[in-house]
Image (cartoon, rainbow, N blue to C red; front, side, top):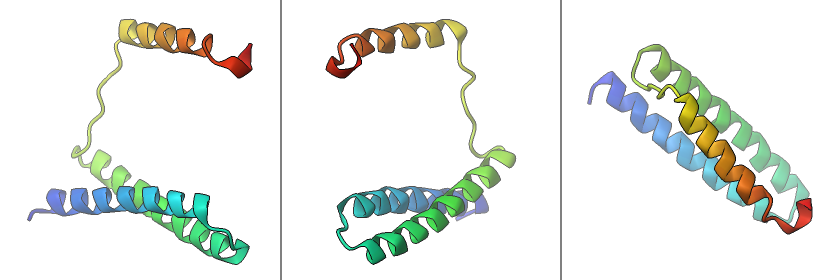
Length: 89
């Protein structure tokens, strides 16, 4: 495994862990346990962000430049959905 693969694997693991901690925070009933899990979540989220920044800085994680027309189409699509929501009317 090269460095890029290693960091990519770590990033995928951190993403999975933050999703799992989010579920745990939503379902835990004990306040003390919630605070502990919340702290661990924050640390994991920070680690995930640092790994993303490292990959982005090294050109290992690139983002697609958004096309203005695609953005407008997406906006219109979701604006239409908004009109269908019962609580926003």
